Image (cartoon, rainbow, N blue to C red; front, side, top):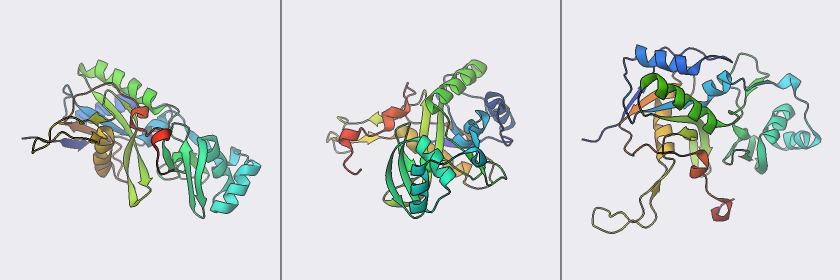
Length: 252
């Protein structure tokens, strides 16, 4: 019988700049009594990667540009925050009171360039940026975890994003290594023998979302999830595999 088992690792502390994420994950695996096997995937919350990599910014050190000040008036946001959003973005797509939707420099569409106040620190002037290169971060974690366990693993870095036509946030993959971003099922037969015409599964996003259910969004403190039973073979991939090319974007 097909099954997927997700386990939030026990005892992961509040991560700070310079902390050894690999060591903390290995300790979490031991505390959770999990011995890694070939094909397992570790889903890691973006916030602990960003904090470990020193992506914390003090807004008091940010000087907003004229563009940021004008956009802050339109969106009713802190102009210092808007300045950081602009620095982390390729383009502003939508701006309205309380809303600033951008194309992030990494290529995906999100609110506020993924910059967040929650689960960062107790100072309202502190915000956290996304990792500089989430794919590189995922690859580094994977190499070290594979070396420590002797198993072939996958790593996903996930983050909470909203969606244009549905309420609420969900986990999405923003960095991956050893996990297929998408799985193309076109040409395979369905249950009645008809070949699939358009089915491409966002496999990494689906696992990122499932893990996000365990991670939570508030004070749960469960930033790493071990997954066993991922139904697709591990494969080399990267974030761009999940992004719709601009020439095929019918909605922007």
